Length: 307
Image 1 (cartoon, helix red, strand yellow):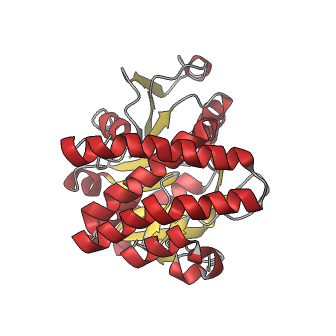
Image 2: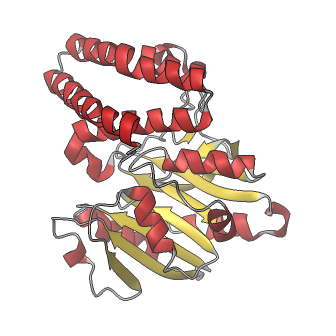
Image 3: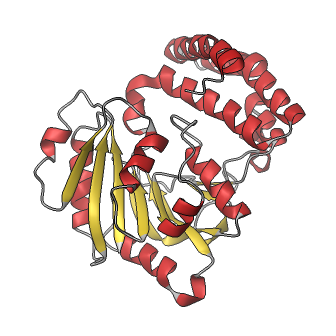
């Protein structure tokens, strides 16, 4: 049976559209839908509360994505878990195709499944990634991955037109075996937002599980989700998560190189791009994000606070 977990934060009518797509799917194995709300201030919950088959959990604070998912899973009963962003809309066959991929006897080594995502313009999104290395993160900080996609983490050099085993599928539509999730201890809650799914995919890989991307199964994903409302803070979360990931998975020297590039090189490359494109809003958001990062650094370095 499948449990669907949706973390909501001010997603507005997107949440209702997401739930509509689940209820309109062709899979009979959906056991439950759990919406956990991270202290939203909009009316998104009012649009779905009382809806049949949907359980709503209210967090007492904004816990972030990883912690909210972990809390919701404790209330789930399914042996398969689908973590679905509220800005995603699944095609009718998407859930059943993924369930079949994880329940077939000849695919017992598959632990995580993702699908082909398309954006508002109907374009296929680059939703798969390679496991990061210090050099790939350095290429990202210097902007080299934009010129040489093979150097980057995101698989921008691949058109995502065929099903295949990959290192990582994006967490916007992330189906995982419950036994894998529980064995690995769920998502690492040190990641408030971003890279908790990539960290999980790496740990699953290290434990011998495969991640598979299905190109013949589709879902819509708006991208950015409700974090579009807080672009500077979104960038801060992204930078912070990258630093945490580096110190968790790389050597000390590798992590130090990555963090140095994030702090010294990347604000310059981001600012230069904003100036060249005439985007003063992006320039302001970049420096707002870095001010947040600099305020957080002493708490992390001297008190071990990761959130």
